[in-house]
Image (cartoon, rainbow, N blue to C red; front, side, top):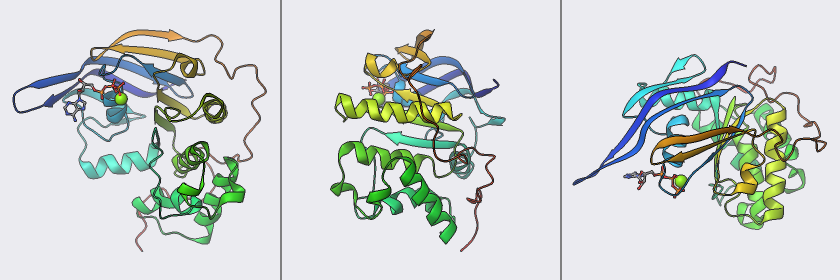
Length: 261
Ligand SMILES: Nc1ncnc2c1ncn2[C@@H]1O[C@H](COP(=O)(O)OP(=O)(O)OP(=O)(O)O)[C@@H](O)[C@H]1O
Ligand SMILES: [Mg+2]
């Protein structure tokens, strides 16, 4: 499989008034299309910093970053947000849903940020994503009317709305009990089986066991990089997803680019 993510000598410094924090100190990493990576390491080792750079939410101080064919290390803010909406989906520990909006509206939000016109077709697409994560009966609920696991499922559906190639997740199960965490991990495993590349930060060994590859960071560098021969979802019957149009080459006409109006 070709590398979908490739970083070379990535450095990220944070410049404070009296101090420079060297958060990433020369990270080299390739992630193949379809891989499922767990990023681990002690607090402060640079996991979120790396994920933010990979997610084009932040720029490296130096080094190269290729996402697919694009060299994103030196892009402008506008170019970065275009790349984000073309390639990437995000899942956060605290779900980051908007409380005043319903399940379907929360799933639509990335389309709005992208400048996409909401149509009956995009609405149906968002409903099918809600159904995909098992929330077809909760379309009009608001986040506070949902359990934590359900809120995270909304966030997973939202991360898929642009049909991203890569899903980035920062502690996606950090606020959930172990049974709900396993449900979320099963869902990510299914998405991975459908071809999504997943890069996930976690502190927990039993969550990292779901990944195909475990990378440990320390002091802003990669300390170890190990293939997991038997990821936890492996061998379980991972049912196929009811949608066959999650991939970027999908015929489903969710606009990929800015359409005025
Ligand atoms: N915005 C910032 N300004 C200054 N320093 C920062 C900033 N963000 C992170 N840092 C510093 O960079 C280093 C790496 O932080 P990062 O958040 O990437 O760690 P982490 O591995 O995600 O830790 P945790 O497991 O606690 O989430 C830390 O020393 C942190 O204090
Ligand atoms: Mg972090």
